[in-house]
Amino acid sequence: MFYKIRNNDSPLYLYDCLLPFIREENELNLRNQTEFRNPFTRLQLFANSFFPSTIKSWNKLSPQLRNAPTLNRFKQANKNHTIKPPKFYIAGCRILNIIHTRLRHRSSSLNADLFRVHLANDPGCICGCAFEDAIHYILECCLYNEAREELKLRLVFLNELKIEVLLFGDDTLTEMQNLQIFKSVQLYIKRTKRFTHL
Image (cartoon, rainbow, N blue to C red; front, side, top):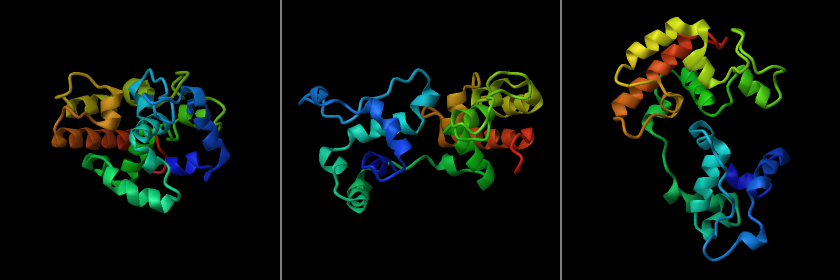
């Protein structure tokens, strides 16, 4: 997808998202041959979202790979560089896994995510909080206290619930612990009944 965006083979609004990160001619030198500036990220949640994480990965590719003449050539050359996501990313029920992934990428039907892409007039939660994002939904919303307490009981091996760990897992934990985190978050999603298609 990033190859398509970079080569103007995608909707223009996606290319516009890249414009602030393109290096100027005078910024390119022998010491720094990366094509894009890494976006400043204050939160790990944003750092793991599409553009910041993909720009970081893109800059690690060789210039020959980045400048592949066609998408097919890029795919073929990139096969050796592909990093597979952890197995726990595809754990659990398909629909719950999809919602979990959408929460991870800030593309869910939570009001703040919809507001960010101009699909909702208000980013607020029905509980009265001004911003219904993944942090609020999973860690704070008073409407889901009972489901949250159950989530905490299922994840007693975590000292505290952190949104980054609940959405992305943790490299310092075992595969089984990460799997338990993901299944527990998906059970939380199911119990809250926040997403109407469940």
